[in-house]
Amino acid sequence: MSDDAAVRIERLLPDSPHLARVAGWQHDQWGQLSPGETLATRRASLAAECGPSGVPSVCVALQGERPVGTASLVADDMSGRDDLGPWLASVYVLPEWRGQGIASRLVRRVEDEARAAGIERLWLFTPDQQALYARLGWQEQAWVPYRGERVIIMERRLAGA
Image 1 (cartoon, rainbow, N blue to C red):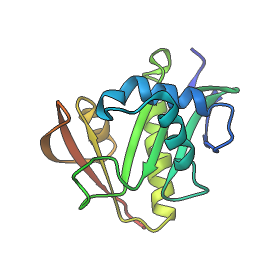
Image 2: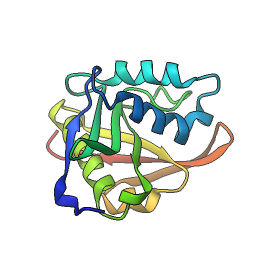
Image 3: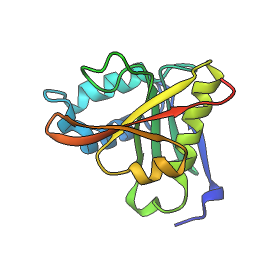
Image 4: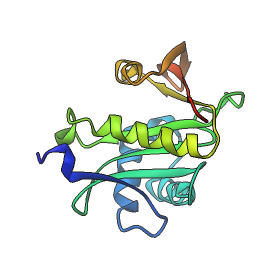
């Protein structure tokens, strides 16, 4: 694919022409974690997460006008863990664009959004990408069962918040 420099990261707006595509990615990747959710309800939830700044907000990686990745900053991403939040959520990069640092840039952008909003720490959970997040400074907290999967909860303390 094209080099990483051609990819820019922007805030996804509720009226974006890319909203349906990003909602489709999220539904395809993580729909099993939200039983009963349809593509239409995921799209509506995503539109509601497209805040002007801070929590919630959604970022999209664009190559030209083509979305190639996304990440979100949300108040709650794990049912039953109301003690934790806000969360880095829904980090996704199209398979053909992986390995170019786009996921890392999306994570850093969400961290910057959180820091600008005065947030001192973020949480995430993942079944299999802990190495990526550890490289970016995230700390493993606990492996837990979650909706039929074994996932790790990770924390990131944000300096300068």
